[in-house]
Amino acid sequence: MVGASSWTDRDSDTLQWLARLLREEGVDLMDATSSELERGTPVYVDGDADILEVQRLMAQNHIRSLPVLERSRLVGVVDLVHLALMEHDEAGS
Image 1 (tube, rainbow, N blue to C red):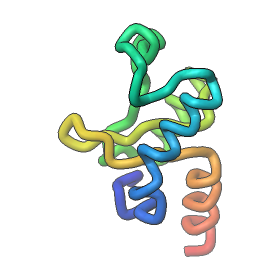
Image 2 (image 1 turned 60 degrees about the vertical axis):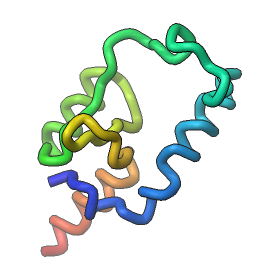
Image 3 (image 1 turned 30 degrees about the vertical axis):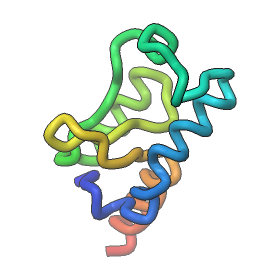
Image 4 (image 1 turned 180 degrees about the vertical axis):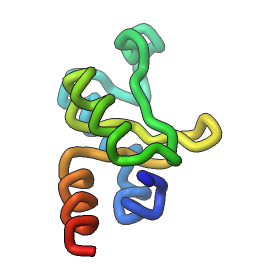
């Protein structure tokens, strides 16, 4: 499972990370219009998704990180580093 407990160390950084990412692309999160933030169909994963689902979505959409939603709320972001650490933990078990 990808749930929030897998990456709680980044919970407080999620919005800051998103704002920084958008700023790097020339978009100020506080002043952005919805059309500036819209980038096609959003790709996200539910907090109950397993690692294979996350890997499939990332590969299919050619992305390195994926928002994690629970009850339609952003609870974090899973990225390639998280996946590598999860796979390493599972291999060691």
